[in-house]
Image (spheres, rainbow, N blue to C red):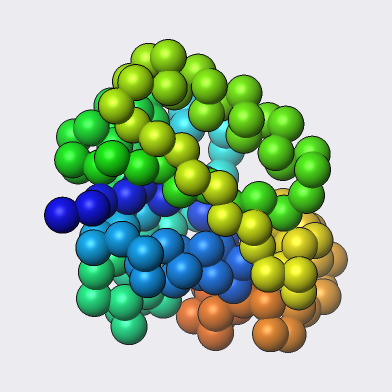
Amino acid sequence: MKIAVCPGSFDPVTNGHLDIIERASQIFDQVVVGVLENPNKTPLFSVEERCDLLTSVTRYLPNVKIDYFHGLLVDFAEKHGAQVIVKGLRAVSDFEIEFQMALANKRLKPTIETMFIMTRHEYSFLSSSIVKQVFELGGRLPGLLPPAVEVALQEKFQRRVK
C-alpha cells in the first residue's frame, strides 16, 4: 500500500489545499493530512479546530485521514508508514524553501521521498495568511474556500469584534 503524508498548518484550509489533497488521493492508496502544531506560532484556529474543518471538508475522499503532529515531519510520516511527503507549490519562491526542506528530510530519513504538486493556476496566489487578512478586514473570497471554512472564519472574526 502506497501511503503519502500531506503536511501543513491549514490555518485555515483553502480550496488550494483541497486541490493538492484531492489530487494526491488519486495517486496514493492513503493520504494522511498532517496538521502542524507549531508552538512558535499563534494560529487563528486551534489544532483541534483545524483537524475538524479538514475532516469535514475531505469527507468525500474515503482514503484521506486527518491527524496532527509536532516535531519532525519525517517522524510523523514514518509513524504512519508513509513512503512519500506531498507538498503543494504555488510559485518559484515556494520551491526554494520546499527544496531545502526536502533535502533535509531526505538526509534525516533516506527512505522517504518528497513529491511536489503544482497548484492549479486559480489558486496560485492563495494563502491562509491572505485569507485571514481579507476576512479580518471584512472582505470575502468567493469560490476560494470551502463553505464550512467561510462560516468558521466569519464566526472567529465576529467574536473578535465583540
